[in-house]
Image (cartoon, rainbow, N blue to C red; front, top):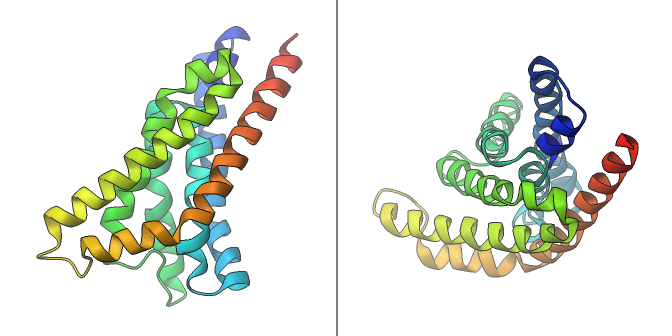
Length: 192
């Protein structure tokens, strides 16, 4: 979506990279800060229930497109782990980190695949969000099934976490399309 808007405005490649870097940095910062806020407000289980890191990552995919979105999805849990490790409470936990890197990468990659269509038809953010959720969670289950012999995660544990995360899915399914539609409308209006 953002790429299309920047192309329409005849923005130079250097400026495009600068804008995308800034937006990516903001999305990653949100993906680090939002879980902290949720954990403070809702306790340790708040992350699994409300999926706060997923929300900015899916928005990032919708805005930034496939490859920049993938970068945001991969970097968000890594940056979060790095920063929170400094304070003695690594989030996500080291055992879950590799799975979240791949899962969030898939979330952002899949939502990013819809980015050009979202530019044309904002409502496409709805199937983009739902498809990203299904692809990301399916990837997580498959990875755990493959690596459960060397991981402390099991398919049953992950399935329970997915069931626990339905409130987060509903929040994401509502907020991502609303934010994406609003930004698309505002940025297109600004262009005219």
